[in-house]
Length: 342
Image (cartoon, rainbow, N blue to C red; front, side, top):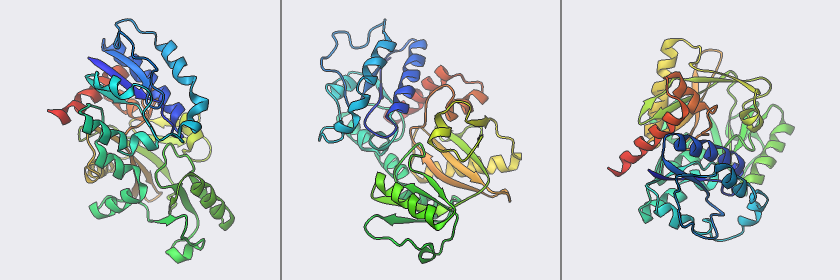
């Protein structure tokens, strides 16, 4: 197949997206697909004469994409999100593998554009993407569907109280941007001073912030592919919590898959993951994150519609527990995504 792996962009997760895109492209090439990686926001100034070559210098292409890293902030000021020739390149592919992370990529806007243009792509459509990206909407839907989730409140930058008692909440709490990803801007506040500082940081990213009950305990993640829950993985940071640094710094967390929890608990968590996946109208694949307290009660935090895709990312590790290597998983995600178009 001729495949465009779309990566990069202008979100706070640009660099992680490039890594995901590089590894996915490499894996698809290994499976003998004619895959190329393209930066969604910078594209190519000229259309190549041979768009999907049999021989492809991936390292050179990634170096070209990385050369734009310092321009991402300025690019945000442009009205046009897509880079030069990106849409035309994507139209010529059999499918686009979305290796995008963060705001414009996971929030459904790219998916909606592709739907209108008849471009096939991996993952969830615009509706599910938009709902899952917004943690306030996600929390509301989880509550309605009976998916256990921490208590919390949505605050708006221009109208909120710094007094937790006004929201029937108390310290400690978790403060995080409503639509962010990769734990960017997430803080655990244990004092009033930390809480006010966390609000200030969160509102520096966007206009809405989630303040939710802090669940102290163990952290887990469950991949759901084509409506089926994969083995659960436990994430245990060496220090602190699973923030941006601990997600992407090698050796910063101990990851165990399958997670060492009672079979009954694992089954119920997987059922909750599938329930959350369905409630958010997700398609093809996603990853749902959980916390479990000392009583063994678990709570779903959020859903990731375009989870990290390197061989050591969480979803690939879960697939590995099923005997599926990284290239096979990438191929699997393409096949389940194509079902949308049958």
